[in-house]
Length: 210
Image 1: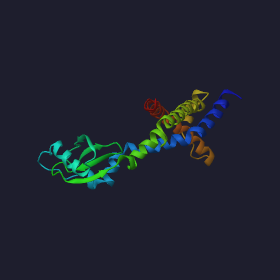
Image 2: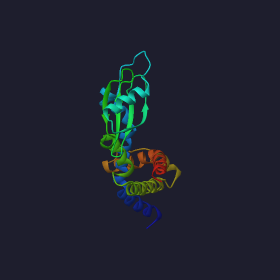
Image 3: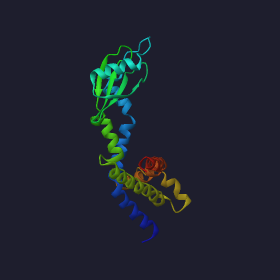
Image 4: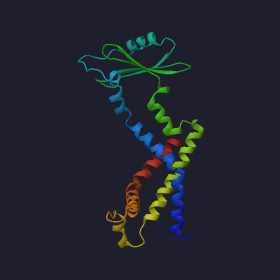
């Protein structure tokens, strides 16, 4: 087999091996990237409050209220996220972590969240470990990402035209062709344009894994 044929063979099988894992990582990463915005829409009853022209209650006041609700838990910290946002008292015990939401102006208790059952925390753990033990999942994610990087490089090599005169043609889709050719051109062209961004995402993602 010639060099390009070997690269094409490698590109196809690397894509098959890593594609599903990379797809899961991408989807969950995208969801988690916008988790604050999604929460503000779906959980506004306890994440957002009416801004008032007065100071927030002291952390000690909110912590005392939290202790009344979960007396067995210890307080790790109290966080204020803005004038229109609820304050959160973070608590922990030997068996669980709980986040208690309060109105920072009145001290009204709003909600308790358990991060272990929170949808977005589960999404994050799928993204990082595929919900497997971290010492197993991170290596599966890391291995698939390394394969994905090789896939991108092999794709660029396969795309690279033999002649300079073919570069313009390689950067466009021939929409008037049959659907198989349009699909092939679309894959090659869009793949080239997103390859650099995908490489940056994949390489920086590896720093979280290793």
